[in-house]
Length: 395
Ligand SMILES: *[C@@H]1O[C@H](CO)[C@@H](O)[C@H](O)[C@H]1NC(C)=O
Ligand SMILES: *[C@@H]1O[C@H](CO)[C@@H](O)[C@H](O)[C@H]1NC(C)=O
Ligand SMILES: *[C@@H]1O[C@H](CO)[C@@H](O)[C@H](O)[C@H]1NC(C)=O
Image (cartoon, rainbow, N blue to C red; front, side, top):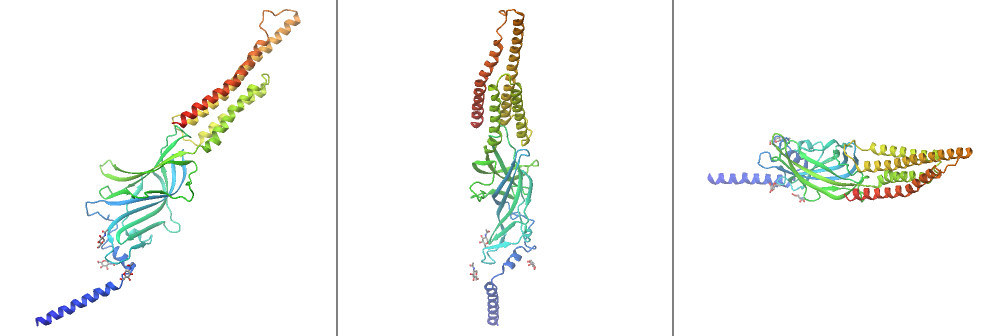
């Protein structure tokens, strides 16, 4: 009797063993693995992976910048097209016991069934997630429960700029990524140890017309405490940008140097050529004013004085001084003509004018002022240039 029982027991065990073997030999389909893993009675995507444990889920972040488009001084922001990659381990999605498949790829419609971190960009003004032809998202689950999530975004990020040295300025623009709802006890953001910030380029220089990078990107970690004393984890990437002077050289500096030089031509024109010298001076002043108005158009209304303001103000001053010089010269020539007329009258009346000043005196003075100006104006403008460029370029 006992023997029979033992035998029966043995056979049933063998059957179970065979059945288990049968199941194991038939490899599980990927679809079944996914359905088993993401079965809502087992897996809740609304709960963070390490919610039940006193441990934070470490989310590794990597940013791949595709392009940095426009840096806008007026609105103090810049636009960036990037791929945000986040990697973390969700132990509930470990399927190494189910199959020897190394990785599962999810469709974007299935991604809502997986827990995702709530990363946001603190200095974002506007952002768009690209959805052509389908949302530009990727989600991979590896068999050890590692989740790789990547999205393509276009971000307009604020960047407070100090324009004191404009256009010889350097700017630091940041990207601030932070966890919005999960405190540092639940979600801990960290940069990927390797290649945390990549600037993907097709060319050697990435498409950034006005700036170049004078220092490599710096990646930092920070934590921020909100008013109710909850600490959040955040990441910062600092872009060190230096403005390309080329545009401002050709559009601002060289034209204004030419206008100032043009105003000196007046010193070589005859003192009696009133229309020529006055119109030259006035045209130079007007052009200078128009140019500085044009420069102000693409700059914000900041309260401090920018380098370009200093440049423009001195340019205007030089041009204006050249016009004033002619006013003085003109007064002298008029005095001269008056004298000449007077002496002619006296000559007619037969009087001698030995007591009077020589009529040539005022003319000589006018000519001397012109001769001195021919040297003083260029020399002082060159001196101003030396001081200006050495002060601003050596900041
Ligand atoms: C989810 O799991 C429960 C119990 O483990 C099971 O009864 C149910 O059939 C599963 N659902 C799916 C869709 O696999
Ligand atoms: C997974 O296991 C099956 C059999 O169980 C085998 O045929 C297949 O080569 C294995 N695949 C890998 C990637 O090891
Ligand atoms: C995944 O599960 C296997 C076996 O169940 C275990 O050995 C491994 O450590 C797990 N991986 C992780 C990352 O938890």
